[in-house]
Image 1: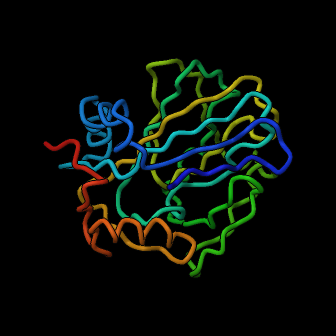
Image 2: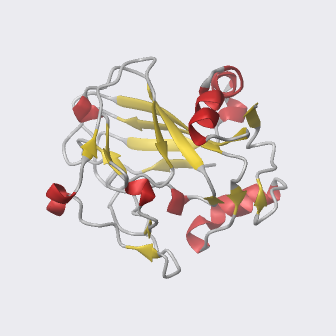
Image 3: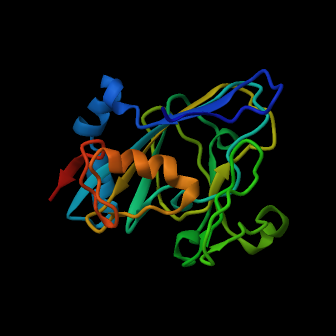
Length: 227
């Protein structure tokens, strides 16, 4: 249901992703329930317990000419409170094939309009709290950037509001890039429908019994760790 194809029209190499696939993918469920990811997330967020609120795989095929632009995750999804993302490469990723982060951007106290991945066109995010994503590339001297070379078995953990992008998003991918991410919410995380641009996912969760403007309480978003 939540498969997304952000391949530009006419391109031969795909850029695709999908989320909430763990109920149909035993290997993903095993990672969610039996790996240390929940404990890692809970420890870093200083949480009493942790829910896995979303799994999300990505594939950017060799030759793909687009990648994730500068963005942070919160405006795309209907969650508030303390959340983090654990990003896992499924093969070795040199720095140029990984992610770049703006250090400290999660502390700016700002929400940015969510750009659509295929064309980098902003969604219509309603509300004065959503500002345009700053032109980071044009003012790169104003920011400190972080990126790492990673291998199989490594992971990167970052805040739901950290600005980041695919490092070589403006260049054709030299090799296929397969990534897995898991989004985790702390005990203060709430489900809060954001607006029309997230209506598909918010309605889906409410149909499963998740109550709006309340704590996470839905089988699709299981509690995976507690003190």
